Structures are given as structure tokens and as C-alpha cells.
Length: 182
Image (cartoon, rainbow, N blue to C red; front, side):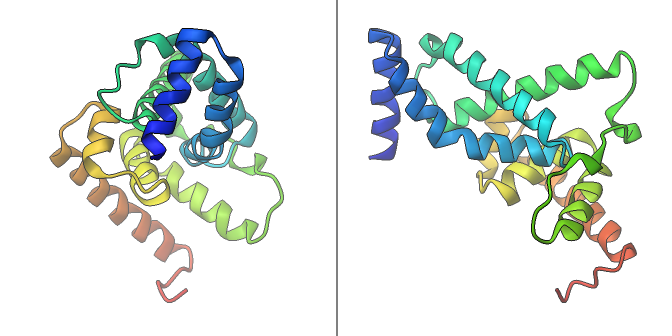
């Protein structure tokens, strides 16, 4: 039913230019897309908001190209991944993301902010593809096959990135006082 509702909303936007139908899609998925970016940017909420906004603008302008070959959230995550990848490429012209220039201290005040900051810092230690796979699989509950479609790599490679990323996260967190019993 959920997939049919998404298809119905997409059809209303494409055929009737119904912006209210697109607003419903934005409301439904903006939290997940913003959270996806928040994890990829290691807690930079302003950048996450900007990237999420870019994602929905691109989704709106490309909605006619949605062919229902995958479900709508997978298509939307693919756009979000491309938006992030374009951002990374533009940044690499001046400096690399892997060098840790992302300001992880721009996070808004929340409960357990210390633990959240540790998670963002540990995510910052991962390679871009490892961070993307970890974020989609563990934080957004996206299947390995869907991740493979979103990032454009084989499922076995996704599993490798997940395994390496998980190992790096565990090592980093253990070195910083997390013993796994929390």
C-alpha cells in the first residue's frame, strides 16, 4: 500500500503538476534523507539541510524520469547519494573530506550529545563509501541489494565495505573508551 501511495503521489506531480502531492513526499522522506546526510557529513546539520534541500529540488525536477523500476525511497536515496558525491567532488578540488575538515562540532544540542559526537567522529574516520554503506545499512535500514543499486556497486562489494567499516568503527570506539557493554 505504501508503494502504491508513493506511485500515486508521483503520478499526481508529473501529470497534474500537483505541488501538494510533492509536499507529501517531502514530508514523508525528509527526515530519513536529512538523517542520511547528517551521518555522511559527520554531524554537520547546516550542510545536511542544504544537501537534503538540493536532493528534493533534483527529485522534483527529475520526477518525470522516475520509471518505477525501483521503489521511490531507493530512487530518492540514489539522488541523495549523487548530491553528496557531487559535493565531495567539488570539495576535493580544494581539500579532501578524508582529511577531516568537516566540522563535527556544528551539531545542535541534543540528548547524549557526547555519544553522538563520538559516533560522528568515528564515521569521519571511514572512507566515503564505507560511511555511505554503514549509514544506509545500519542507520537507515536499507537492504544490501538496495544499497548496491543506490551506490552502483555489486552487493558483494557493499558487504566488504560494511565489514571493513564496522571493524574500523569498533576499533575507533574501543580506543575511545567504549567497551561494547553500553
